[in-house]
Length: 253
Image: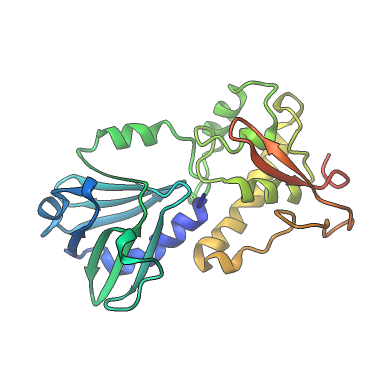
């Protein structure tokens, strides 16, 4: 699943094309019926990433909300260039300045009206955005410490209602960087240790948001050997979704 840095990277590519423009709209998927008529002629006033969510804010209080889950993606390129996925997989196409912005494969793409829309209320339930300019530690710790104290830290920081934008890869990388065992329960983690996790992952995700996946230097995720002790990396499923966690049993305590 694309993590917060991937969404921020997409927003950084989309913003120069669409912000302040009235793009040509082509709604290709059946679930988007009527979108062209509602959005054509409206200026895009903001392109906002938040955690794993992306929002295109149109004038007139209309918002396009995207969550890519496991299958979706955003593409930007010159108009007329070959797309990286088959045209039949395109859900939404926006054209401006000789470029195309394409949303492929959904799976969650919705249009809402009003500042207090269902979309905005849903986002209000999320934790602070890991890539916010100023991270809200007070809000983060409040939600973290209200969680089940027996929950492993590796599972807890994947909870988007605690912190928005960290996914399975960055979870593993952050915990390795600070030497914290992903299986340690919250009751045995200090605020200083958890703060170190956030401080470790924020700059690395910010670098990736600026440069794309080529900036993702992995230290532990899906690697066979630990880069520090050269021991074998362990892996097994964690949490309700059984996402595979990678860690070094020697270096992470």
